[in-house]
Length: 479
Ligand code: B12
Ligand code: SF4
Image (cartoon, rainbow, N blue to C red; front, side):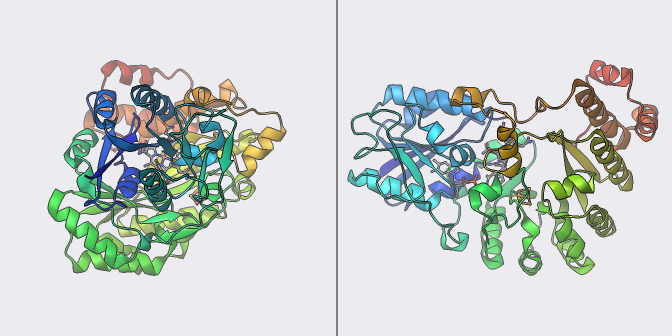
């Protein structure tokens, strides 16, 4: 009889396909294992289905991002453990990679996996299947017992195994998208957009980012021929219109990008795609490669500008120059490729001039093309990087429990060091820059003109248009 493995993706507000669970689940031989993915974002009653699926399962794996998704990860794990106290529950993903020990303070969690998970999880499952201890499985923290489902011990009695070196993605099997109901994702996304990950890790060292800590600046990219083959297969099966490459830095290796574009053209694949690019990579890219990518379907890139102040960029070790941002923007404009620029505001000790500079750069970029958008985020500390270490030295305290982490808002709010005045300024600017430069219907043109005037003159007081737009209940297009 096949052994059953259940994988759970907690509730969240966005609908990117559960790439981590697909990667983990595809590592198992379907002749021997029955893998079930329960994604709370697309299930009517995810917990009911989860409790049904864990019947007879060998183990449950849960993927956990920092912040709000922890709330549902906890609820699901607790419900599963109550129903099946003998069921080993394994947490993996970004939060357990950063806080493995803390995750194991939660009694329903038996094992926390750090970093890349395919081989680690496969080894855990094999050991569980044969009743062996997890001692020595690289890349995990677990309870120091013969097996996680043996007698429960004190939550402090933990055992951290040696780290697992990052494995070249090309040695891992392709993700099997038949493990999920893909049409449900197209429905909730309201577009036939397929998600795909073509590389893992990142070679850079930005001091606000979790990646250097989790992947130790390692990077592996899939071979273009393999990508062409896989995407052709799924495109023919699912008829998607667009691919979101969820890589940290898709444009890491220009020769690889050219080979990928050529694969798509050779195979005559008719979908558009979007991918991540650093400004220094865009700066070094030649127009020919960008034009080739455009011909192969590239419609938009995402570039982390992070700050409009070069001093701040140097401080956070972003290793880009502002002129590289504008140079990349010019190139993309020439090639007809759109851009989303990400800007982070509210770093600790960030001087007010730096925020002003970020707003100025955002305005200049937005004015360059209606296909350029700017998204603003507030800095929130991730442990294990230099900024977070500095904050801790200054007395900042990270949440100490999973429940407290679940309340940690990574998306909407700012850090406590951002004054009310700065927060209001940024929130108003976020609204007006969208109104000013997003494509607008003729009815909205007067509002748009007014918003441009406001942005150009930095006048954000009495934001009556915001009230008006809210009243009209017609949210502006954020396409
Ligand atoms: C898609 C995505 C999302 C999706 C999540 C989709 C989902 N599944 O729910 C959405 C859009 C919701 C999202 C939101 C955010 N995200 Co996000 N996101 C990503 C992104 C681009 C891809 C994730 C992915 O699928 N990767 C592909 C898979 C194969 O890799 P993986 O997730 O690392 O999984 C591997 C291991 O982690 C491990 N693993 C993962 N899960 C499990 C489970 C088990 C059981 C095991 C054993 C192993 C394991 O094995 C996997 C295979 O090797 C990553 C960057 C990246 N490239 O990874 C950022 C990233 C995860 N996001 C990040 C951030 C900062 C955010 C936001 C705060 C952004 C924002 N400012 O709004 C929000 C916060 C969400 C929240 N707290 O509510 C950070 C880290 C966050 C953190 N500490 O949790 C990342 C790393 C980007 C970055 N470099 O800063 N995100
Ligand atoms: S912010 Fe981007 S470039 Fe910098 S370390 Fe993180 S993933 Fe790499």
